Image: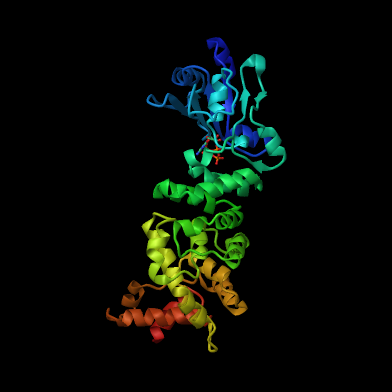
Length: 401
Ligand code: CTP
């Protein structure tokens, strides 16, 4: 449809960037970026007459997007004619607008286009060696000032290297190091840093990203006390298999970002915690949950290691903690017994709830007051200990108390 429409209008049209990269890597990507050598907005309007999606236009940028019923998003932009002042070493011949559009992008693997006009359908446009870099699994910038012009690309290089299991090419690495040494990261707003971290922390390749961030001294650039050890990286690497274990017993959605941050900060000085976490997360409830987990963890570990532990003690120690905290404790501690008790709680105790309510106690003729809590706690304890099982038992037990 798109190619045919472009032919009708006599314009060249391409799919570009991430979609082309993922197509060549045989990876799913439902967001397609189109570049048209002409007016992107009127092209999008015409295209949507056929596609009947939801069209949004941004006149000031000359861009438009169409969201299709299946959730895919098509972004349509006009090819840019000029962007930065180019380094002098580049050839001076007049460049096509697709060349200019691709040249302003970040890495060679993201700088390819596929023409979709009917006559040239499927023609790969690769001016900068992207295909070769995909074959060699390399992240490479196009020119030396790339990270100076846009320091968020430092995080993107790390993210793509981890997600695709590629290596950052040596010269690109040294450009990153120079940019960090020149304090370029201080030019990235806190919000942008947090957005990039959210993407890095929720990707399966997070431990490799953290290794790379450590090797570029990014953590200490973000907060001087944040010294990440290899042990921390191993623990973050273990998070995925730990999560899988917990998923067998609780299929609630797990906030992986919280877990990664808990693990990153596992031995951070508690008095500086609040200020430091905010560099990574801007979500009040999330920050509170992380702080509680980190403040409570030693107490949880020592309580679980006491000799006289029984089911109700395990229950009492763990039942006020959120699922992410439990997963974090399990993943963070090195003691077999602690892990064992946490898993025991997940499998056997976590879902124990009382059926009997205050109304039942009233029906039994017990006068309301603080006694209710005492009775309910006693019944709960017996239930956790396995002495009573169902609602009938509970009421009978209440009657005896
Ligand atoms: N881009 C860039 N510099 C940036 C951000 C983006 O050059 N700081 C370019 C890249 O060419 C990228 C395209 O814009 O391919 C689209 O960006 P984005 O949607 O953020 O990334 P994708 O490559 O599509 O990757 P993802 O799969 O993570 O969405």
